Structure formats: structure tokens, C-alpha cells
Image (cartoon, rainbow, N blue to C red; front, top):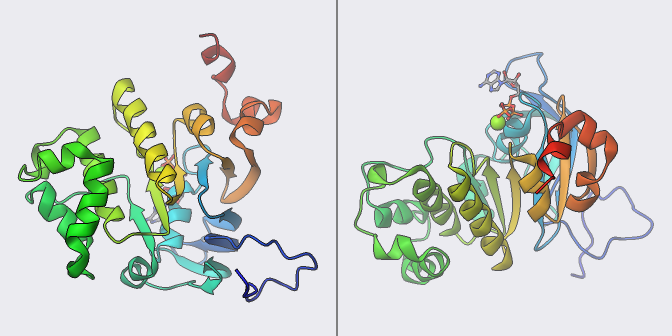
Length: 259
Ligand SMILES: Nc1ncnc2c1ncn2[C@@H]1O[C@H](COP(=O)(O)OP(=O)(O)OP(=O)(O)O)[C@@H](O)[C@H]1O
Ligand SMILES: [Mg+2]
């Protein structure tokens, strides 16, 4: 990486690692005059698995939507590998390497698994075979059941289709909004394992999770979001052991840790 990060405010000691994705002090929201994000800075370096946790309504989904061009950013910037992508629309972002899996309605139920994966690649149909191989190596069930309609799958299976679809475009960063929500404990474990595998396959991941403890256990670093700001950050282990974070955001942690 020889080219310096544009707009890096003349940092005296350059971080030799360029962030794959960085939001810099972003402010924004849905309605005029109402900010949901109040100066939110989050970054993911190549290969990192980043967690975002925080109370309901903190703005976790909003920050992913802001990165993905679905929420107006009123100030601050978003960079993808040094390029300013603030305000770009989703189709441009997908082409540049941002993958997004929203929490809900993330598969086309009337289409088959294979057709759902094809939809992920509508911008680059020529590499279908290669990407289908990659995705079905990570998720063998999707290959075996490629002709099955997504609407007939369980919640956990749909989640895999949704992740598979986002992976078809070979994203450099994958944004996941609560991938384990609504799943049984066994399916949740499986989903976290899959996220870990995706990350190990070289994809940087930013994952919002309501299951804070499990999220902190598997991520490299995490951010606690509160009222639209990054309130705390550290490695997953540091946050799991931070008394303030436990008291304010992981209330049930002490009780859960008994096993
Ligand atoms: N489409 C929208 N229009 C107006 N306000 C919205 C919209 N979506 C979310 N909000 C508001 O933005 C705030 C943050 O919502 P967001 O969905 O980002 O929270 P969250 O941290 O993801 O919460 P949860 O843990 O419940 O998913 C909330 O006050 C919510 O009411
Ligand atoms: Mg949310």
C-alpha cells in the first residue's frame, strides 16, 4: 500500500494499514432536523471482523444504512479503501465492493436459491460460475438445494442465502444487520460460525448484533453504539471484561458467564 489515504488530516505517523471501511464522525438521520447518528466513527481494517452492539434504538441499523447510502449523511465522511463514498447509492456501492445483508426481507422468497444468488450478481453475470463455487464451498447446503424456493427455507437457511447473495459480488466488506435475530440457539451458533468462516475466507465484516456477548466473543474489535455515537471501542475481549460496558450494556453478562 504505497498511496497515502486522501483526507487523512495529515496524520504525522501514517498507519500503514489502510482501513477497508471508515466512517468519520458521521451525522445523519431520516427526517429533516432529526439526527440519529451524532458523530459516529467506525473503522474496519483488512480481514477484521468488527462487531457493533448497543441498546435498541442506538442507531446500529442506521449506521449500516448510512454506509450503504440509504440514510442521508449530513456531515462527516465514509471512505472505502481511501476513496470517499459518502452519499453514493447502493448499486454503486455494491459495484465498488460493499455487500449488505439487511435484517429483514433479505431474500426473494418466490425465487430459488440459485436465482437468489444470480440476483446478487446482476451487475457481473459473467463470473457466476466462479462465485457460485466460492459461495457453495462456504455454504454447501445452498449448492445441494439450489432449485429450492427461498420462501420454503427456515430462517437460518434464508440468512445463509442472503449472505451468499451478498458474497456473489466479491465484496471487500460485508455489512450484516443482526444475522442471528429470530433464530434458535443452535441456529444462532451456526450463523456465528458461518460469519467467522466468511471472515476467514478473507472478507472484512461489520456485524451489528443484539446478541452482544456472542458477538464480542467472535469479533476482533467492536464498538458500543449509544445515541448515535461510538461510546466504547476495543477488542471483543476488552469490552467483554470492561466493567462499564458490562454494567451499561451487558447487564446479564455476569449471570450468563457461569457455564
Ligand atoms: N425509517 C425511519 N424513519 C424515521 N426514523 C427512523 C427510521 N428508522 C429508524 N428510525 C429511528 O432511528 C433510531 C435508531 O434506529 P435504529 O433502527 O438504527 O436502531 P438500532 O440500534 O438498530 O435498534 P434495534 O436494536 O432495535 O435494531 C430510532 O429512534 C428509530 O425510531
Ligand atoms: Mg437495528
